[in-house]
Image 1 (cartoon, one colour):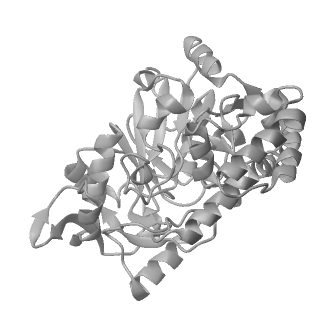
Image 2: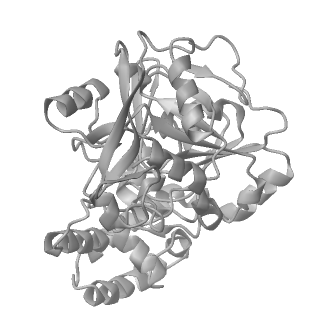
Image 3: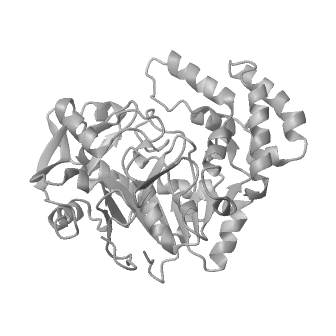
Length: 423
């Protein structure tokens, strides 16, 4: 994969409710960049890519870390779970570890955050269905100005002298007094000892790379329909996985990013609670879930499944100021003569062609389904009728078509250019 010479920086975002296959798209684009930058979320994300027939799963680290010579940058907008991050780091070659750069402003997820989240979910009248990894409480601590940052735990004596007192105060304030303080000290010590050389001012790093003409690839986790501000609130994540999260999540100006690629499956999935207008149930759903292997990378939970939702996709395209689509999981629908696609909704007898702003309205939607052209075995030619319908319905072209699980199973269209033979 080669980027156009005039295109220095690209961002990849999910357009649905997560699990769109962003990891593979980032991995494909990463062959022609100098750094891949993750700007939000934490271990609640799971990116999977197949290199040959070997499956690689990452939660914090951007997929670029699997390519020789590419920096893998964890931005200040992330919240990092020490044990999970160390587990990932220890699963990759040491050469790759030396290419990791972690923001000194990124916050740390600690055991008491997990305890708080579990307590909230158990007591909630309407549980969100979170991953229980402490992500939300860690962001609460950040915005409550009581968070612990990577730069803090790298300071001499902080873990030994300051951290226990801070955590005792915070855990009591949040109703889980004394929860996991000794464990937090232990795991933060491990994190400091293993990754102190990787912690730096990543904002300055990105500015320097940009000034040197280096190419940057920005990677969001989850999907923009889970955006804390613009998703199906309150059934959302705790950060901004949309393109809008790049600036605050990295300190790098989004004005410098030339192309935004939005990733969507040829159908939709959602994990956790919340509205999902195109959702299907019963045997039809079970068959689609099984065919697509729709079980959470992070939790193993069965994903809810439904059809591609054009009004939701148009909303996401507008929100992210999208330039092109990356279409994934089309191979799951191989052999279908026609593909069900949601092109509008009915609400109280009224026909709608836009995704509603009100959560109450979203929950009351009845999908309007059209049958779009199917294909035998997915490739650029067989998919052309479907791709043309998608372009016509959204105004956005497809630039990348994934034709299978592996890195080399992909078709590339403008403005990207393929190097070598790509299936």
